[in-house]
Image: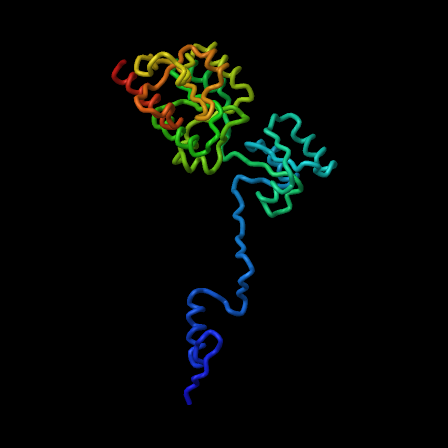
Length: 290
């Protein structure tokens, strides 16, 4: 016998099952589905993350490259003293943060400390310069002053490797460091080109100058034009952040400052584009002359 009774949704009793099947095809589990419950997403752990006091100490003993260490404010005093003692001979970038920051990075038992490891080994710029000079080879160093965007950093490194840059020099603090994301953006170039980290960028640049390397600052404040600037020979090209440009102290100590001529209304270029234009101009001059 046909059931013509309708429920409060207007469906006949005989049609309720087919409606359930339609709901099932949409992916709902009618037994467990709770409209008020938000979906849960498991956080994927970052491959660069080391967490836990003992793990960070062991990474330090193994001389594994570490970009920065984040320590919980008000961390257990005994654990903090143990960590402090283990790290005292290394000038790591330490940040003291609330526990919520660490919990957002990992759900594991971090004991109040999380470190970001570097997927590459940072080199010493003085050693690279000495090696090149001893062999009588020309050297080109790309200096990045406070470039904080990882994608810009990776893109610049890719261009630098393509144009034969011998090393990239970055400050240890206030700059994007080598991460897995940076390596991916660089198309692997950061695995091939040496990256040097320095605690005092000004002192490192002074060493380059004393070694016979000209410092060339690319800044919109310059009077000379890029295409009138001699980029041949031993040079260190300095590029600054898009927000603030190159630190004035570094501009002051540079041998040459130069700018990329522009005809539009916008006053600046993306730093990755600017670095590419300058490095390609260097290659053009070396291959075809000024």
